Length: 248
Image (cartoon, rainbow, N blue to C red; front, side, top):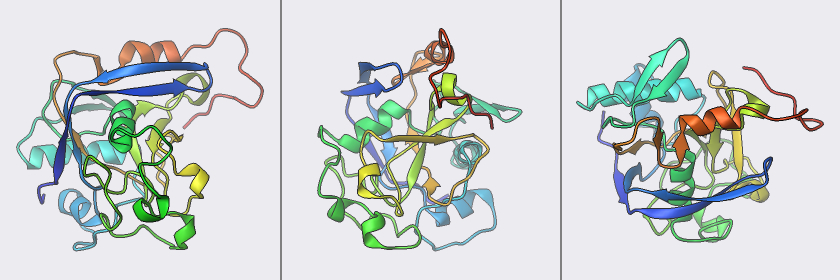
């Protein structure tokens, strides 16, 4: 496919939180590469087959599993080692692989904030497409101002799938998407806002942004670990009212 434009982001730290468990923690990140803009419909069509070429708005209506398959297929097309092993609708991240992948949630928030600590890295009307703009579909990537890392559209335009689970105890296998979309009100377009969906679900305002970077550790990297996923999937005592586990 047309080579994606990546930025190499420096090592750094990001503060994350888990509202249900009322827990805050810091994640130390190694350097990694992230796409300057979300994957466009044109790029997606080049990799996955018939579609709309020369359309440079973000691709949407793809599930988390579709995004995973795109990453692997694009990696093989470009001579990179696929990042994921697929098995009956699930995926295992090979953390030492060189191929394209979804960012971890910690990587995504670190990249979005780009050294800032507020809800936005600039005035929303300058950096993001939101409901205030009264547009009815995703807009061409890269038209709004970039953040300090040179990344466009991390807030607004479309939500972006991440690798991590949303909350296994509450939502089962739901995966995270971040960033807010073109139809969202300002209060939802924030660097800390988390949403998610089942890995087989697709949404008209959710796309993806590619990451790259191989890491020495196995079953853990860049703020994610398989052990933490297991621990987060358990809860002592009854679930709080209104928090039934969701199934795909």
